[in-house]
Image (cartoon, rainbow, N blue to C red; front, side):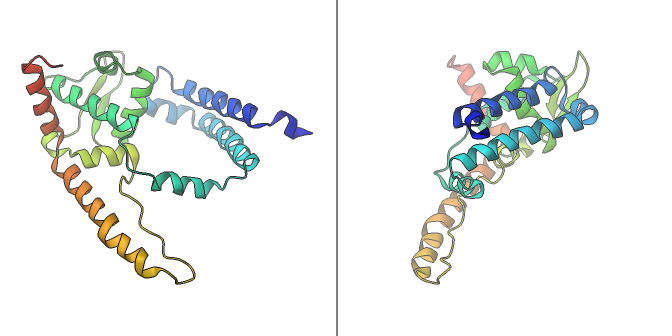
Length: 219
């Protein structure tokens, strides 16, 4: 009975192991280098992660699409990835005035795992927010002035769409009035307000505020 060896615990362990093997491909290397040279290995490791993940979902009778939608509908929260990304970009903005900055230096100053920070910067680089210089003396620098980089663009690069998902109209056609009311008076207003705030605050604003705390010795 194959399910004897594919219980929930063993599947979770398998997911973790396969994800570790995927991460190992990128360890101590630039993302571009790994994608260029090891795309087939990435495909295979990613396939293993998906395979065991879908098997675990099947064991638990979970609809993958449904649980993803439920996750997105939960209250908005600034994830660890976004928080670390914002902290690292403030650091980069401060220290890259004259030259590029090594990722290890950013990680050390902010007590963030270099491996995790590499994933964060891969997303930021893909979104065109930062650029990198390869080699042992390489590092990162902002792709444009901090005044032109909004918090909205940073979070979108790291998280995707940060807005609350729209209400779904009932298939039966019932209760459409209440659904539309919630959409208009709650969801649309929250999304508009959040978007307005995130688009109005730039990396320059964050750096300026950070410098004020430094001046008062609060960092």
